Image 1 (cartoon, one colour):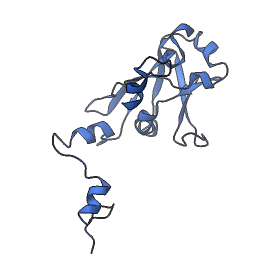
Image 2 (cartoon, rainbow, N blue to C red; image 1 turned 90 degrees about the vertical axis):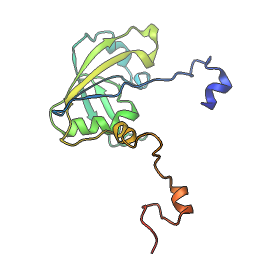
Image 3 (cartoon, one colour; image 1 turned 30 degrees about the horizontal axis):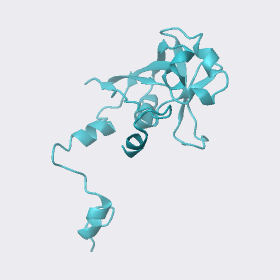
Image 4 (cartoon, rainbow, N blue to C red; image 1 turned 180 degrees about the vertical axis):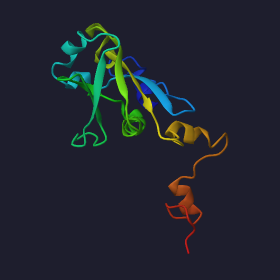
Length: 167
């Protein structure tokens, strides 16, 4: 992490967030706890968070016109934009939303003193389709020593980016 090596991790912008991997059960139920991102970019969000209570239901709305990411998913109350689902969880959240009924609730609404990036902790509960494998399980199923072949290494061996031999 070159940017932390340069700053020593002492600047206000030097935050690293570790995301908990969602829990998946054999029957397709799933649960994920995460911090809502981008609260400072939504007018009124900080004030609204002060009035949220544990267990209160929130809404998820897709935002295909979002200029930063057309796959963005907005977290809202009935009338206030609060922030967004973290980018690394977007594929998972879209899968849960597409599988049917899902529920987003407040786990903890922290005071403004903790900073915008730690204000709102939420829990998403729902289901995933049968046979669903999240990206983190696909990567770990390769096992130790089994690395995905990069495009550059395929190019050296004569295979195009699609992976099939040239012919």
